[in-house]
Amino acid sequence: MATPITAKMVAELRARTGAGMMDCKKALEESAGEMDLAADLLRKKGIAKADKRADRAASEGQIVTWSNRDGTVAAMIELNCETDFVGRNDDFVALAKQVVAQVAQDATVDGLVPVGGDGAYLGMPWYADATQTVGEFVKAASAKTGEKVELRRIARFATDGTVGSYLHFNGKAGVITEIVGGQGAQATQLGKHVSEHVAAGVPAVAVAVDQSGVSAEFIAKEREIFIAQSIESGKPEAIAQKMVDGRIAKLLAEITLLGQPWVRDDNQTIGALVTATAKDAGQPLSVKRFVRFKMGES
Image (tube, rainbow, N blue to C red; front, top):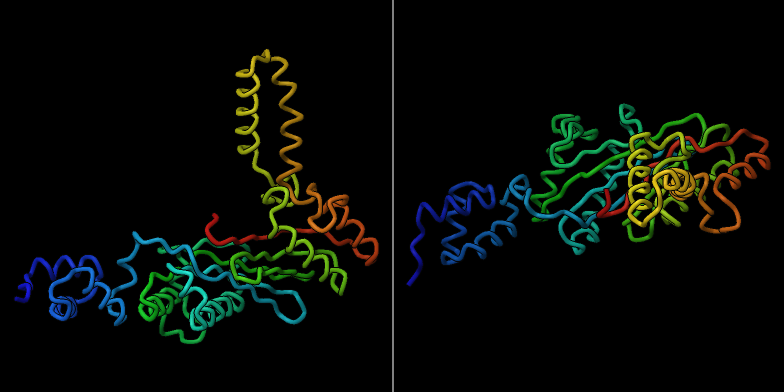
């Protein structure tokens, strides 16, 4: 005997999926009242609303980079979905490329812009059809895939120098780096080398180009922690205060780009690589900024 479909069941499925009442009633009838099967059915039909999936993780997907021919503009996006299966799907990869094209042509984007489920950028007009927004375009894609699809973050650099980029083969990590002071083959190669190094995150993920880019708040917090650790180990506070200077200097060398040993040659720092390349190129090349995306990391 078939399970009677009650108004309460319809309301529960509607709250769970965001689909319309009649769609929910029909799905419940087709699934003989099985809530999970009905929800799956709505997903398969692309009826379940994407914005009702906020409690579900979107930790897979694609990071995509784009650069123009002369290397003066580069863009990067992270587009998330729920499963690796969808993330590797040709349609999803094509979607990610459309989104990075949107960011690439949008001169209002400068640097890193977090987006997420309710970011302001979702309200921007879609470049290929101004009658819909970026958010509406992404939401439509979510309905097609049957999974939560979220534009997590975007970045764009435009420069009179050179923008280098690196994208890991599996689309899980990417970097764009702005090199100022010149253009040409050597500047382009430097941008690629630095981007590759930042993506590797060795010996630690760089948080800034140099120490001037590290916030005073971060340094103060680390100093407080180091002092507490030293005192806890039995050192007098006066000695702990002196010891901490060396630990802070070591930390800053590890987390700032120019002080890190180059991933391709750990006998040379990134700072030394930049200096050597600038000398060979006869240009005052330097690293201005970079952005690193890695799937699953903030």
